[in-house]
Length: 237
Ligand SMILES: Nc1ncnc2c1ncn2[C@@H]1O[C@H](COP(=O)(O)OP(=O)(O)O)[C@@H](O)[C@H]1O
Ligand SMILES: O=c1ccn([C@@H]2O[C@H](COP(=O)(O)OP(=O)(O)O)[C@@H](O)[C@H]2O)c(=O)[nH]1
Image (cartoon, rainbow, N blue to C red):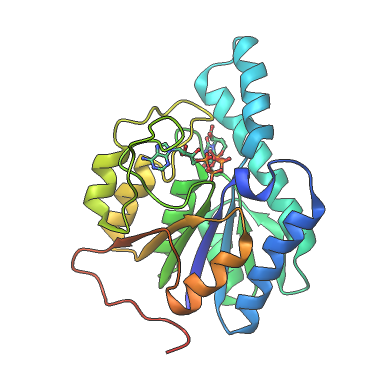
């Protein structure tokens, strides 16, 4: 089974805690031992937002701010690489071809951002489509996709499952400035829809939640069901 795991910066590196990074790396290594081929995409987290905020005050434009965000995602990718064993490609992949080559060689490949105007959510979706992944996982700071932002709307309800088209509708109104927060960005949602990619959005603050989701489809987040896609297959079956 080939899986792309997007690890939000907010869950990988809300602060610089080596034990947390190690815990995420352990999950990735454990899945690799189970025979999964793995691509990981790492976000920028609070550090990216701090840099973006400072540079915005200094007058940088949105593309320049995105470039700063990309740099931070790649530093976080290096952190994850440092925690992964010898099975990882030691280079942060800067494009999908390099990432795909690493996976074909049998390595775990780690990416950060690639270009302005999007977030690592879209990188993960494009990476998953490029390598024909069986599953795309978003390990983020909320346990799934809600009808509205659960941090600001107490009446928001969680979708246990939804189509990619419904996902596009729910997140379509969220702002797209550098550093903005959404469980999955709009471009990612469109790519998931186009690729008919089976996708799970879950709470990755506890990294151990990723493994049962990948191996058995067990999680409490949101399943994004492809319209006209294949039935889910799990490695354990
Ligand atoms: N409809 C929604 N459903 C779930 N989360 C939402 C929604 N709208 C906005 N959010 C916000 O999206 C954020 C998730 O993104 P973020 O914290 O940037 O995670 P990551 O670091 O994984 O990218 C959460 O803080 C949550 O409050
Ligand atoms: O391909 C990319 C990936 C990231 N970013 C920028 O880097 C920031 C941090 O990345 P991301 O939002 O994915 O981090 P996370 O939300 O996971 O902390 C984004 O807000 C964008 O400004 C970008 O421009 N292009």
